[in-house]
Length: 325
Ligand code: SF4
Image 1 (tube, rainbow, N blue to C red):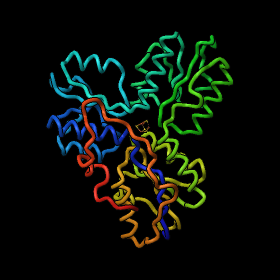
Image 2 (cartoon, protein in one colour):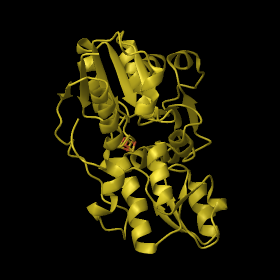
Image 3 (tube, rainbow, N blue to C red):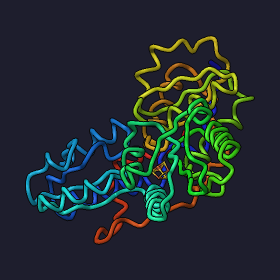
Image 4 (tube, protein in one colour):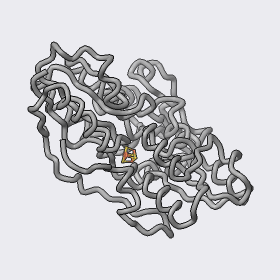
């Protein structure tokens, strides 16, 4: 190992930043316990940190004591969750990413107009459960190009598509092209619903592929956009590994690779990336630099109503130790 190139942009997106800060702010204002439905974002270290501060993670709104305070995760939920939470007297704070809410609104609009909706996404993923739940009778899920080729749908002129926000840009384009060829009347967003953060992180990886011999993606196994970054490198002929943090590096044979690329999924805080860089320094790599545009992406989402933004409150979670790669 001679050098490490750290991709930019990488790591936390505006939706994850908002969701984490929502929990911290709720803890700050109301005190523990604040209940959080599912993992607020798909990163175990972030979840552990919030738990240590008084957040209680639950699988379902039914697990929250009556009249408790419940934060809904960035991936969004189906409407029944809101109904059941209200029936239990819970105070709900919705941290669903605004870009996921936009897809929910699309699906609701098409369903109300009598459309059948092809939702391109991975069945069982939290976001897809929430989006499909906006109109369960109208939505059919398609995950692969093969399924897009074989699915039987009436081409009645009332057919639409929507997508999960964290998919592979290239695979999704292929699936949409297949659907458009098979069902010329299908309507949908101009391109897809893949969000800016997913798109930018995949593009940054593609741009660095010619410079690197292997890619490391810092992210959790459950993080869809992190897994897509691994696939982006592999599709370009570069081996890639998903790691939770630097402790996973002892399991990977890196010695034969000259240049290692490093990136992080949209739910990975920067302090884990910095710890990975420290691991490389401790193993004798001194040439560590940023590849790409390190400037902020300039996307910012307001906190849910009633929660004012207090940056110091989340400094420990987001970027403990500060610094740069
Ligand atoms: Fe929102 Fe995209 Fe981040 Fe998901 S990955 S929380 S859609 S900005």
